[in-house]
Amino acid sequence: MIEYEPLFPGAAMNFKAMASKLGFSLEDFIELVQLLITTSQSELLTVEKELAAGSSAGVSRAAHSIKGAAGNLGFMHMADLAREMETLANQGNTGNMDKIKKKAAALKADLDLIKKAGDKGY
Image (cartoon, rainbow, N blue to C red; front, top):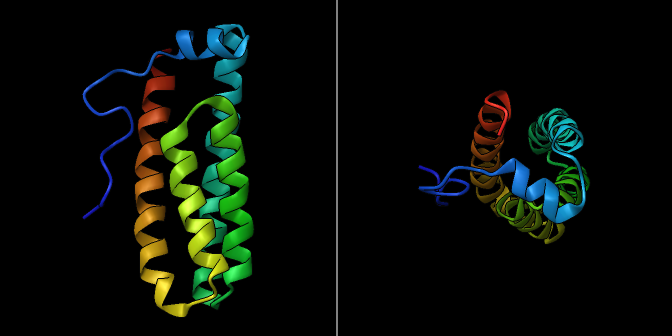
């Protein structure tokens, strides 16, 4: 069970408003969102591999990357999840691995919602 509410619970994402707030055209914003999705999916694979290897430093680096990319585009729920993952990884406590996995699952769920919204052209 994911311990977080889904991204934008009960509301549709408004890419046009998000783009405008950041000073981008909708087309440019969607291109950046697609890059965010691709990069974040890759970083989540890295998180899985680093967790399996017991490398908290690798998890921290991947989470840091997601945090910055998501935050810069205004996806603050994703950025918060990644920040929490990074913090847990930086504690170096192997007991945090299950917590990191849960946050990674919630982050993946957010990515799936963003991808679906992007596919619809929001």
